[in-house]
Amino acid sequence: MKKALITGITGQDGSYLAEFLLEKGYEVHGIKRRASSFNTERVDHIYQDPHVENSRFHLHYGDLSDSSNLTRIISEIQPDEVYNLAAQSHVAVSFESPEYTADVDALGTLRLLEAIRFLGLEKKTRFYQASTSELFGEVQEIPQRETTPFYPRSPYAVAKMYAYWITVNYRESYGMYACNGILFNHESPRRGETFVTRKITRAIANISQGLEKCLFLGNMDALRDWGHAKDYVRMQWMMLQQESAEDFVIATGKQISVREFVRMSAAEAGVELEFSGEGIDEIATVTAADSEKAPGVNVGDVVVKVDPRYFRPAEVETLLGDPTKAKEKLGWTPEITVEEMCAEMVANDINHARQHALLKSHGYDVSVTKE
Ligand code: NDP
Ligand code: GDR
Image (cartoon, rainbow, N blue to C red; front, side, top):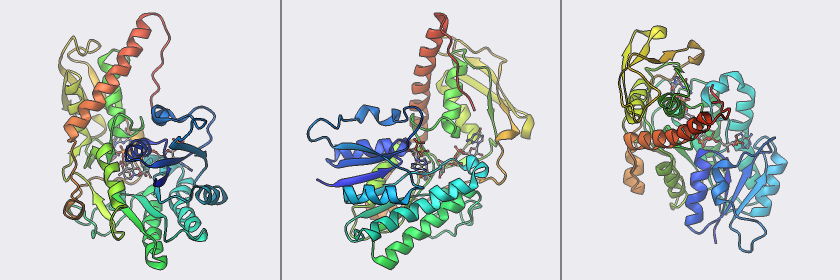
């Protein structure tokens, strides 16, 4: 039975990857951080009681900032595959906490690679690094492919650039099977609530059910190549099953703006929007609403505004990936379109919103956490 270690198992990708590897028959180990409250919501459904014989799912306390902890965990598990998905993954937050982001996202990767080497596992353990389209930042070529030069635009992206090159360096220096998946944005109903797609689907759902009045966003002109996390974790595994390690761009090859994603999400919730104004004065007004699907909304309501707080000190305006290499060498193509993904996310958030609305109508005090 193959053993995999996933850092960041409690995150969006970690949870989908753990499900995927369990289905493939792996013994799955994950590193979770100590928190003051439970933080395993995304993997609770696959939790297996460690007291049960033959349990194939194990969680270990750990942190990418702690070398001795990582070395001990890897030494105990002796994994065949390590997927390094843990990171301070929020670009805007990396401007607030640049040093922490560098420690975890850049040096954390080095700590894992060095632990594998130090333990003499460099010929046994295969290593996947969660690299990112943010490396392309101020894009030098459209679309972006494996050979496109990097131009990172945030402390997050700069830290991830170190992680990218140290992974290549350990491959070239020590013959390790170590590779980078340069993944473009990928989302799902499990996406963190402060990333823009989930922030939008959640707010639109809440607004449609009368739980919120207005969604505040930053740069609505930003263009992204959005795929579904389920499609992308499959590719993370495929990259570790080749004869030799190589780096791959994973993307859909299509891009839409943040504004378009808002429009699409609202339409899914039965609300038609018209955008007007420019820059910080841009708003979206309801022009039609399905009273059954969206009882909380009326024609004429202004439901989206711009808040400059969400502008970033340096922005990545446009990202569009070229996944040709992944298609030709690995036979990978994404199966879920952005429209299907958006519909799934809105449906999931409307479900939550309806539950909240029901509780509220029965006198319970439900607050909606926002950023
Ligand atoms: P999430 O933010 O959902 O998950 C990040 C995970 O890392 C969580 O499990 C988090 O733990 C954990 N983590 C954070 N800091 C530490 C630390 N110091 N030590 C140990 N664990 C830590 O990210 P995604 O699942 O979306 O992304 C997975 C990886 O892929 C990340 O590295 C991200 O940068 C990268 N990536 C993501 C893309 C995307 O569009 N989703 C695109 C390209 C790359 P906790 O749950 O406790 O917070
Ligand atoms: P990104 O994702 O920065 O691409 O990083 P995010 O969803 O945060 O932003 C995408 C674009 O939307 C614009 N935007 C807003 N973003 C947020 N979060 N909140 C807002 O209110 C808002 N308004 C507009 C942003 O400016 C940006 O242009 C994600 C993360 O998952 C990284 O870890 C990963 O490496 C990259 O995707 C690929």
